[in-house]
Length: 386
Image (cartoon, one colour):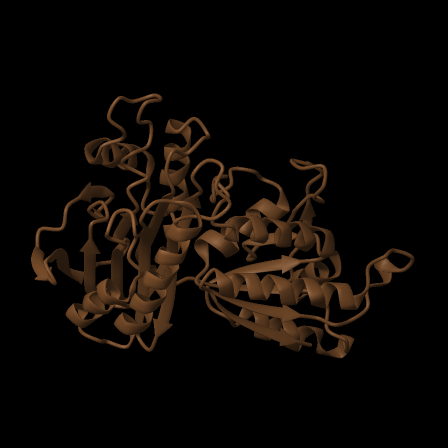
């Protein structure tokens, strides 16, 4: 099965609290609609224009209203600037289903970049339309697995003007950068963050314009199952593990007791390591037949922190971590690789936690918060309690 993932990263113009760009995403039926709107100017006014534009377009396009009517509504609805006499937001709209079929509409934003077979290129079937005197470009989409569409605001091609570059970062240089730095396994969010971080470097950490990059990627689905803690009834250990192992895809076991239960069921041994890549995260273990084995509550608490950071559209740290601690390995598997996550949460009290400020309520709250964040990442999430 194929899965459509989306992600974006935004940089605020220096000294501005609000971003003049706005990304809105709606999934309705089989189709996902992504709108990147760039409000004229910067600050509060630009933010309002971009927010209005993205909300209106996302609602109308997702409900399959004709693009001409959508654009006319935008141009006739937005307030007009008394100084310039015009006030509109430029936009890029992707309307696409899980088979990779749909449309791309562009109005005055930098031209979208199409990545196929790991190589950046232009869409060959880009058609010009004139709506109320404005040029809007329409492209019919038919993506295949691992194809990516990158859309952006003009802060991307302005990056470095008057600083490191005379004329900014032009489209050929953007394409050259992506060709050299992306790989087919990167998520949409990872690609968007990579390009936005490069723009921030060109701005020397002081963006001269609001800068936003959004990406849409069609990829293979990957199911990940995660067992956390033993069930309340010890007599159900084997039933619990059997159901967990019957799930398709990759398997994660969190917690010492859970690891012992799974290893016993598989007739395998839990091998432990005493390496501490991160002093805040307990070391990982190994069970043959299990993709990742980690400690429980402390590692999940760190994982929740990483999920908050991953979700932040302004965070520029790499989305694919090179660290080898348990929380980072979990983050890569759940945030970057997984499209669907199933939790098996045991509600038994852990004797090892007696006397520590850790109880079953804390564990359940951590899993609940983590599940919510995974849903915000666009994952399909199921939580089973035992």
